[in-house]
Image 1 (cartoon, one colour):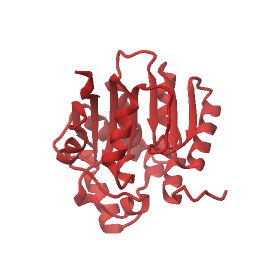
Image 2 (cartoon, rainbow, N blue to C red; image 1 turned 135 degrees about the horizontal axis):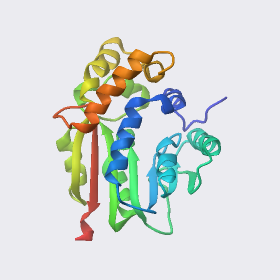
Image 3 (cartoon, rainbow, N blue to C red; image 1 turned 90 degrees about the horizontal axis):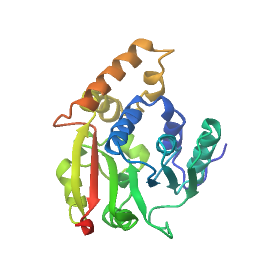
Image 4 (cartoon, rainbow, N blue to C red; image 1 turned 45 degrees about the vertical axis):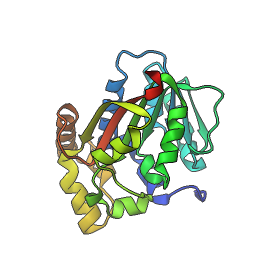
Length: 247
């Protein structure tokens, strides 16, 4: 399959194994927890990639629109939607900057998106305009500029964030309800593969419980602990915020 010019081949390969990505899916569990008790939300998933999180949110009873500038990612998302049979979820090719909506959303989610955008301030301002005054904004970004390496370069990242940098980006427009690091246990893996070896993470192999049951069980256990116990460092930051205009 030939990829469009809007598609990053390295990221496309990463999305092909997203269902086996224990790291990404554990982060999704934390995001689901931030929406616990909320019902029938209209959610925008900005930078939805291959749609796994969008489909999980739709399966939880929400109405979801996923957008992404890559037609190839949206194609993957629609295929995943067909295979899972999940309803109340649709996908549109669009960047955040170009996206137009006739209505605002109860919740806007952007997982590992802002680091791909040069002007993250303008992109975040647009996300805030897309959410209702009493709505919810959920963001994840890679953490620790000192970990910036092969993986970030291959994905086209402009930066990784510290807690202070993400707070500085969000605080002028939003009240931060929760902000935590995630992935403390994977810092050595990130440093080894991305900084020293300069090679892709073994995402598919590590998460395959049939081919590598011991590795998958160990990784699942470590990430499960990371999910339950926020630590002062990590490979990702996870944020929940509400617009200040709701005050």
